[in-house]
Figure 1 (tube, rainbow, N blue to C red):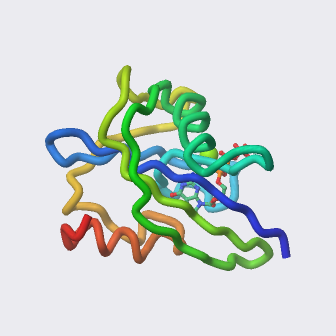
Figure 2: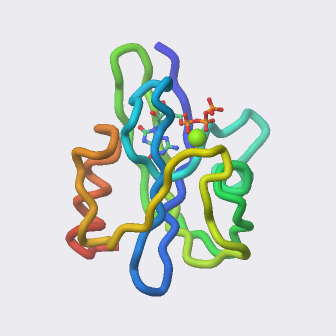
Length: 131
Ligand SMILES: Nc1nc2c([nH]c(=O)n2[C@@H]2O[C@H](COP(=O)(O)OP(=O)(O)OP(=O)(O)O)[C@@H](O)[C@H]2O)c(=O)[nH]1
Ligand SMILES: [Mg+2]
């Protein structure tokens, strides 16, 4: 089975709101909400991939990111390992640079069912205020 390593950014502002983007209607997990991010290329560290993907997808330059855990999940025909980073420092203002719908959500109001299954444990930790 194909196994992807994915860098994922939880962009959190000083009001404890988190930036979400919606997956394209045509993509796998269509219309689910997600944290911006993407595949780690062969010659990249997870943190380098995070910085590149967040610039591509949201237009921000990450200045502060800390690793907060990983999640492993097998979808029907794809295995993913998500590398989560809490992003609390950046230059610019995040927006859906690829045209994807976006919104800021209070951390405690995140709803697990709106995300792909691989995110559910992380959402629980965020809602519980453990992060
Ligand atoms: N970005 C992101 N990907 C996630 C999350 N949760 C999750 O299961 N994934 C999975 O991680 C995989 C790769 O992410 P991605 O599609 O963003 O990768 P990418 O930006 O490099 O894709 P692209 O180059 O095809 O646009 C997808 O299968 C996606 O379903 C999440 O919260 N954020
Ligand atoms: Mg992506």
